[in-house]
Length: 355
Image 1 (tube, rainbow, N blue to C red):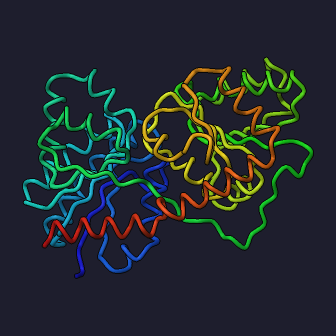
Image 2 (cartoon, helix red, strand yellow):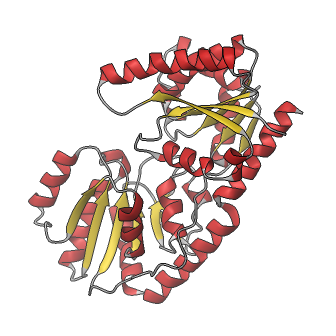
């Protein structure tokens, strides 16, 4: 049955996991067999540009709801600021009696909810309980959401990725050193400065490694940290990496590290696993549902530099372990985290709402 779906999400040019998911879904049968309209609720840039986009997005949504006979409005939300923005789209959809799905991507929302005003708590609760369906990325969130909004209709649906081209060559540990990669926001909460400190310690202990950092954020502090530790020859900042550049980087990566202090279901970890790269990450958010400790990678406590050092040493020294973990990682992605399977499950949700 042909369905008309209105996606409310950050613009696909926005740097982040939601945009990656949206682009992935639009390349599947889900988009080919249904009619999709996209409204950008947020863009990167100045405050004025973001405000203008928020207003424009609401006006476009009103237009589609009035003139396009929308069956389902599928809202993609991130952290608390994003949820507050999406509340206005939710209220508009309610006026038009549309079926509503709220797809929660933000790993920090539940913590931020505790620090927001009572008025916004009510609004967020209304957003969850008033939506016909709430999609969560992690089982860990299930209990927490039920505490906030006990009447919400929730289901866990993991993020997913498209598998890379299997015909292209993988080049691992070919340059005389181990290539380590970090992709994410350059900020304390992502643990990047913890990683730089551990890389410095490993180099002092005689380990031959090179760290490539991709992402955006506090680049001024990043350059300062690299220079102060004398790591200019051992750490490369590559900026925001996409497309062929990311593909090349991942094919040359031996170990992927994300020592974050808070996450939802990181797309970068799934991408690394899809390239058969062993992952070291923290035991936060939905990460333990992605990584099987000791099988597809290692889980550590956030901020525990000694643990991070120990696990990196293990993988640096043991090529067989790296290969074994990488193989099991790509098998896990093929089985549980493929974008086509995610699209099928979303379509089943659409069908159930309209049946």
